[in-house]
Amino acid sequence: MPEVSLKNITMRFGKVVAVDEVDLTIHDGEYVTILGPSGCGKTTLIRVIAGILEPTQGEVHIAGKSMKGVPIEERDLGYVFQNIALFPHMTVKMNAAYGPTVKDRPMEEREQTARKYLEMVKLLDKMSMFPSELCGGEQQKASLARALATGAKLLLLDEPLSALDARVRVDLRYELRRITKNLGLTVVHVTHDQEEAMSVSDRIVVMRAGGIVESGTPEQLYTRPRDVFTANFVGETNLLEGWVKERHEGGSWIELRDNSVIMVESCDPQVGEAVVVSVRPEFVFPFTDGLLSRIEYLTYLGTFSRVSARSQSDDLVEFDVPSIEGKLYHPGQEVHLMFNRKAAVVYPRPIEGVSEAVKLE
Image 1 (cartoon, rainbow, N blue to C red):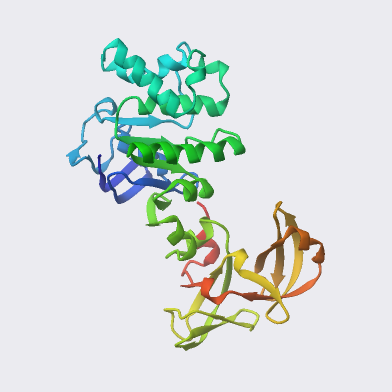
Image 2 (image 1 turned 30 degrees about the vertical axis):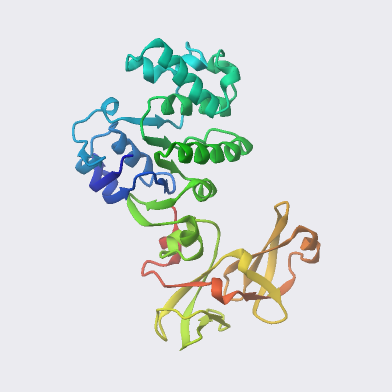
């Protein structure tokens, strides 16, 4: 199985730097998702790996070999595009057999290969149909079967689910994970959808403004992100600004802008340093004492309701309650909020300011 190594990859379009000195290694059999907001350079990066774009600077190595000057058709990879790109004049089976046909495989092998991968994506019963007769999810499954039928061990997925309905996206992302893991493929998956990235990945690489912010397992990036941008972008979080008031062995006291104080686990910043505290909505709860806030609005989300409250320091703090309890809260109501201190993550306050540090682009 191939390992993908990117060394000092830079991609410029005139004066615009789309990718800026990126170093990244994707290991054999690893499912890596490149996650970031629109315009961060993730699609450009996967196109550089594919050979659609030649980098301005740096090198791509696949299975230990330099890809400099090697065209896409010679890189032994499968590619599934954001915009479904099936041959409209071919049946589903003919599309799936395209790779073996181009490689001039015997007719019987083409037939067997097409059937194998169509069965894998659960489209065998529709192999005689044309792409126009399929729904969007089925078309993307056919695209996946065609990519897999090439026999390549490296699969590149460029926003493969973004054009699909929400329910179809959920179903298909689990199929992607199951199929690629069963086949032992190395996968590079580009998306801007955090939930999609969390559900399919062995490792997530977070990009912003052409560079890599950080990478880690989904659990690492959700529970202990190293950068405040990641904390805000991966999932949802409350960001509270303040200063370290006291540090003890068992925890630290953070004084917020309204002079209220919350306790967190021990943090690196020293007493007097400006910080930002990140705490997910599911770790905030109403209590008899705590951060005084006033409810602004409620959002019904099915199994739970999200309550958005404004603290005296003008921070918007959100917390979740079971939907059946949502009727207990209403706009204008005062609540005291407590935090699970073990779930809070403390960052030095960014020099450029919090809003600038977390803005998407």
